[in-house]
Image: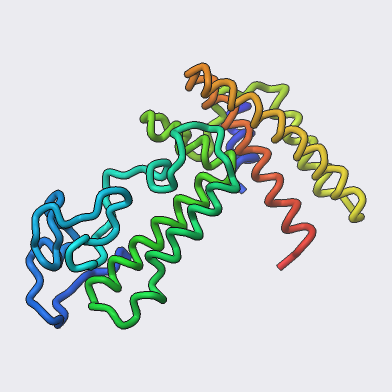
Length: 234
């Protein structure tokens, strides 16, 4: 019964790179968005990719394709940890967008335009994921091969689900801004408590405990979204 209730409470292109003209005929690897390790797709020189971030060839300065093996923490110069310096994260985001945003490649080749779009999207996704505690925690679990399927009630019990149901009922009955603020304050306090707990779980390497707490955070995150919609209806 609780599983059904949990699901009821919780549930609330790739652009193809086709043949285009450039100053030179692209290799098949460049056309598919791939390049040999350490080799520039544009000039073909071995070891041409700059050390460090590796976004540009050190010889011809052509933008290189994103590294598919690089995780968000590496991309954003963060330690792979739940504890993240949000200000440094924001600074890194701005720094990368100044390097790879498509607006800076409007006069470049079609290949570099394509790569800049891929880089920019990747940077946006990384920033959004690592900025918020819930998505950051879920991503850390994913890197460990652990995922929380939608609708799961992993680690929750009847008492917790009743608490969620009561908060949802209060939200549905709220008739004033003050009532919404009170509910929002309660939810914010719970999320702060969960955030501190999941940080300890990750520090201790207890991924099962982290999974349990993050599952609960997902419930409260859904309530937060409902509060936002109540305050700013479409």
